[in-house]
Amino acid sequence: MGECQTPNVVVDVDSPDDIIVKDLLPRIPYHVKVVCGVSTGPYTLEGLNPNACGASEAQVISSEGITCDSLIDCIKLYLRSYSSLTDSEKEEYEELKEDLESGKIETWKCFKFLEWCYKHHLDINDLIPMGLAFEAPEGIYNFA
Figure 1 (spheres, rainbow, N blue to C red):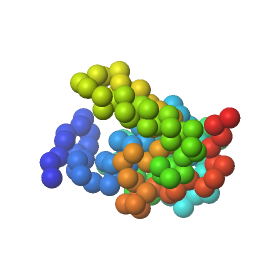
Figure 2: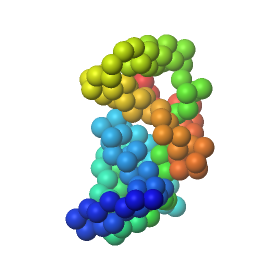
Figure 3: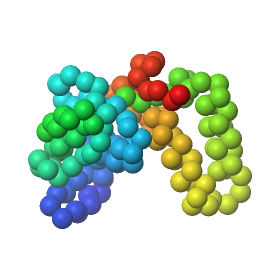
Figure 4: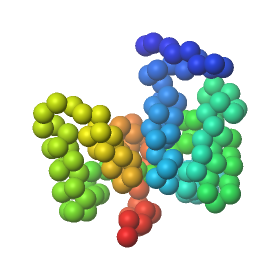
C-alpha cells in the first residue's frame, strides 16, 4: 500500500476514503445523488471539498442548498448496476465498450466511455458490492 502526499494531507491510496473521493469527483457535473452521514437525502452533489475538515472528512455541497461536513466513508452515492440499465442503455454501453476495445487505446475513446458511465451513474468501480454506495432505486434519476 503506497501513500501519496498532497499539500496538507496524506491519503492511503487503497483506502475506502480515497476510492470514494476518486469516484465522486468526476461525477459532480452529472448530478449524482448522495447521502451525507446520517442526514436525510438523497441530495444532488454539486461540490465536494475533501480537505475542508481534515484528512478523513469532506464538506459536501448539494444543489438543494445543504452543506454538510461528513466523514468521507459516510458519504454514500446512489449508483446503478449494469443490470439496472434499460435495453437501449445497454446497447449504447456495449457499442462504446466495443469501440474502446477495437484497436489501440485512444484518449478520446476512453474519455467518451467514462463520461457516458458517469453521466448514467453506472457503478464502474464496484462500489455497491464493497458497501461504499447504494443501488439507485428506480426513478431516482430522470434521463428523459
